[in-house]
Image (cartoon, rainbow, N blue to C red):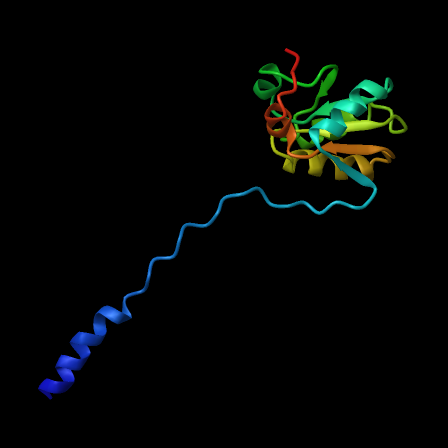
Length: 141
């Protein structure tokens, strides 16, 4: 009996669950159809300078937009779905459009809605404003 008790006491520390690392917090990936292009900051900058009819949509919150945005950007707060849909419907679905947010998730969701509304030429700034600033490109205020 003592031997069994001793074995159980020795085995108890081995039974402790090892703590698991905390989960990585990253935005969920929103799958895009092939018709929506992801552009790195350099390609987006080229699009800005070569496409005079380009519509630029910033789908971040108001305070983010006020802190700096791409030149001539049209602001749509993606966190207000009904307003987003209404504001998108005021734009020309035929014109080429560049969409961006802070990191990329909101712009992907907005681009999918745009496609649903009939927009035909949609590009996304991959990595959002964060990638734009890392590339040392300028913002308007």
